[in-house]
Length: 221
Image 1 (cartoon, rainbow, N blue to C red):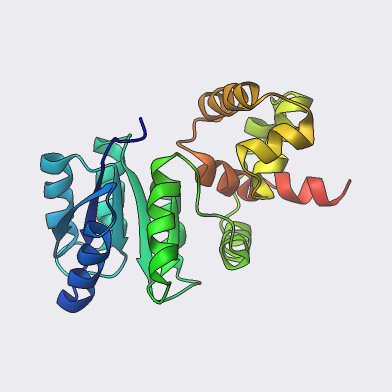
Image 2: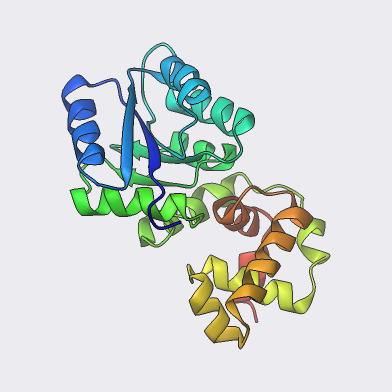
């Protein structure tokens, strides 16, 4: 619904940055803001506020953003977590993505980019467009590769095409145009892929594609 308000939880231990982010979120007429000072408060607030999106600092006292992300994603599958970090190649970020985070942003991102990230996450899409994100996933996934290729081998040719398009960062509309499918059919394929592969969203699907060597098989064709 176009007038539905989006609940956003800002989890950040630095008071000035937290206040700035809360002010930024509250300034968007579609967003409501709540805040937490550390990971433990974020987990508690998630149970109380039931946010649609969490902007999660990765390095915090008491409980870090990785542990908090694991807890929130496990307890509230509908909540989207976007990681905020100072480091674009932080292994903690990779583990948070594997734990269920939708994507990540650098803390020096512009205000428009941060708000855009909230809306993109809420709509169920992944923050995977920046090339640095793909490099991080590719590099760390290669070091963490698991003998899990059978999960991808059971996909149909069309499902493999959809996965390849997601790895390229295409939106649903772009996938539909590239594969000559309707948007509704693309969404059906995505739901089927998530269920078949046991992944939460596009981000985890991309990570699995790298970890299983599926992306390498695309490059060899």
